[in-house]
Length: 450
Image (cartoon, rainbow, N blue to C red; front, side, top):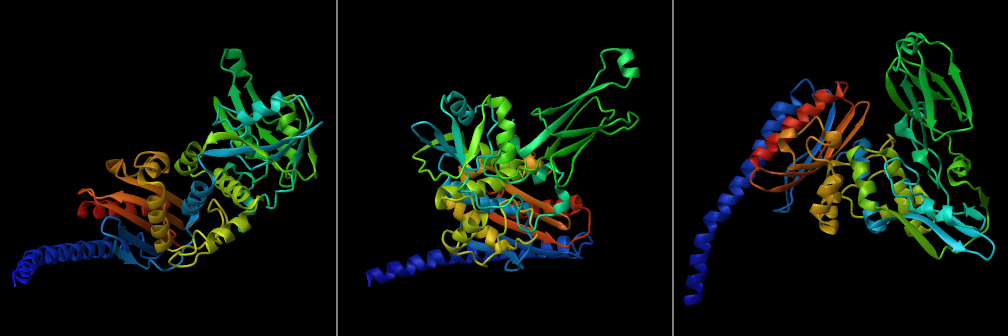
């Protein structure tokens, strides 16, 4: 009787608290729903598009709000969240720079897809130093390369844009040629002659045509579609740089470009080797931070290829996505279509619940503090013009294509509650920044309520 009395007293004491908690939780969800209906779906900015939203309370392990969270959307660069998970899972703490086997008369090396090789963002170059120190002839095997330069569903007419650098087994200089114009302002006579100095980094021996028209105002650099032939037009800008992707031709362009900087030739071989040793190049988070902060397509694609080479022994994006979807990511709430690492492909299809699920999985496996160091917050990276009031309270990845505006990530409420969210908007013809501002207002309201 005494025990039953204690239990009854405990129930009477807890019941009001539980009821209050449930009432508060329902009230918050209802208020989010009301605000979304009023400010998002009846507003002219989003009324004609398609949207999906999922907001999850990570502390209470419950959904706060869901609107078409199980519907599929083109996620654009939110796809990089999936690539980030793959890289975090399989690339350890440093990038695999180069595998090698020391032969009797030849140093055999195997490319691993490392995008940091001679990239201007990385001052330390362990792989280059290793190659430079070799006294034996160097031969590179290409037997582990099983991908294409472009991903499935990429827009072919973006080939001249820096954001669509080709994928390759042995990237070099970020797989772009940087064209630089510096106008000579040292004297009045030089300015009168409209002189400027134009050069490339790296220096190349490929075909270059300079436009003789000095009356143009804009500096331009373009490449022919089918060959590494460049067309340069002088402009009036005092200083300007343009990055133009080059045709990689598998290994060929990289091995051609490395001759001058390395001072030696690397031959391509079909010899099968067993690379027993690996040279690591950069801390993985240094690459991942750049990848997520500036939404670097090239880094994302190469991350997927490096992970494939590490896990499967070949650089194949399709084999790696298939492996991930059938193993580590088999429990997606809705089975997605995953076509590339960057999100350039419009064939990608994910749901808001998919992104909430993988962000929760990433938090549990790798820790929120590490992810906060990798993802941009308000006022930084791709969020530099947004969420400035919520700096250090939001950590998220944006995504943009024509008619596509997305954002998924982590949001801390004003009371400290951690929420995981995904907002995907497709087929909206409004100017992208107006949609981003509407989403920003909505997420600020969600933060205020929590």
